[in-house]
Figure 1 (cartoon, rainbow, N blue to C red):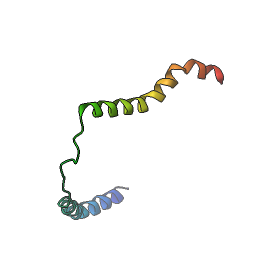
Figure 2: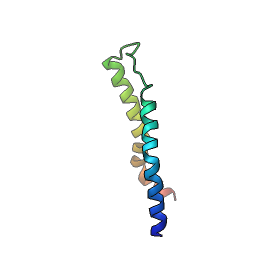
Figure 3: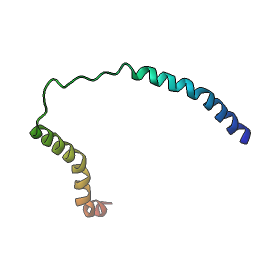
Length: 73
């Protein structure tokens, strides 16, 4: 079993420099641009509120009605 792990690590070490070079080459092509339109604080607050309700709303509903779900089954 140790031989299997030693072989795995040997192969992994030999591939590591090649993988690192590929990642560095791809990173050079990413360029950022300034946004086309500015996002105001009202829009930011609205989006954060909608996302919070969308994520926490269903779980809050289930927790609020947990006794009802327990008595059903």
